[in-house]
Length: 573
Ligand SMILES: [Zn+2]
Image 1 (tube, rainbow, N blue to C red):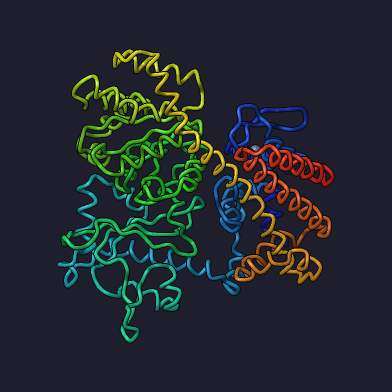
Image 2 (image 1 turned 90 degrees about the horizontal axis):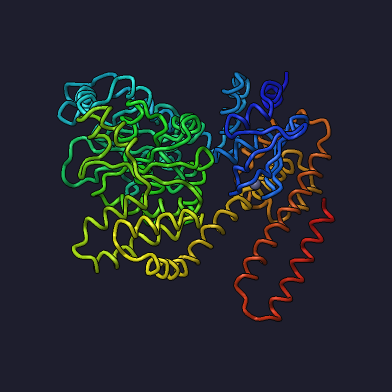
């Protein structure tokens, strides 16, 4: 019996998989494209159908359909396996049994989340009345969701559920499914009281539950919206950070939106879950939501914003922000908008009536009103410019506000033609002279310089770190699986980092390499790539240092080191 990996590889070519994500052009026997993993204007990303692999001459990204999906979708190996198996129509059942026996911690947590989702869904379907009615029962929740404009189909599709207002309904349910206290706590579904003699209690109580999935559709977290506001509890409560949920790296609805974003060549970013579900229902399946995590949180680091935007940008360069302009989240989203401009994306803002969010607009004014808002969306700079001019009382104030609020966005643009286009536009609308604006823009650009460098560096280091980690993981997996002492020694300290994930890694290595005809050759190949990546990383650091040093002698020393590293890299090839 062939492993699922080789079955999938038999059914899906590299061309099939990659072309479902990005546009490919023929180039002799190979295919080429603009690299999805780094920002470039001319294609340096090549695909060899014969070898079933890809390579980028710009950033060094390389691999097969599995690495491509992992890197493109931001998934781990099992997530990529699940996604590709679905695509190829390969059943993973045989492996499901084995998986269960050696189920890793993460795997158990994914399953606990799935069970919890099923449980929450049942609470709505079963319409529990009677005793629970006063706490908000399923029937009332269903009525409420329908009154907000949701259809039964949407509720099902998005697997919206309800956590009953009680202390340990979910906890008891999960215990009955053989999950341990530790697992339930680690999944972020129940909490341990400070007094250790007291019983655990559910984190989500009396809340409408929205499951958050990764891009392969596995549930990794929940967002719970309070059903009956008691004036004390937060309106929204999200899952805490867990081994399967990184709060700052998730966009709600990406699993359902990604195909449509690609097809329509733009995405719509909204703030809340209701906004998202109603927008999908209105036919805009290219909508994703920040859902209080990821992009709309001003405390999220630049690197995380870049990584989230990177996921969206790989699908399309065009993004429309659709927020209620009165809310705090809007200002944070403007920050994300500015970073998106720096990454060369085209950013527009949908015009919503003040105080109205997309969910209200769709349910009260109808689908056509939403269509109009999206169609009439304006470039982010025009949007801010008009808002600033409208809000300022006299021309002098406007001048200052334009410098503070509008020019940073102009400065963030990549193309100088676009910059000049907007300078002219500002002149036309505000009456401020072009030369005065250009002077101010120059100052703003000086101030922005370090931010831009930070963004570019974040982008580069994300790509590099990921690739090196990926190769290390593969090598560690083989070493642990084969108990290969020689390889273990070569990996040294690195291996220690992966010991806690031993079961996962062995599983990956086994199903990946069990049919390999020449494992030693694969190992050599990985080791060689690993060495190259280590040199790349050193090179990147030295280059960055080179930009910073002012001392001539120091500069010469760095240049010599860079030359030496390049030589080493050449020898490895
Ligand atoms: Zn590249």
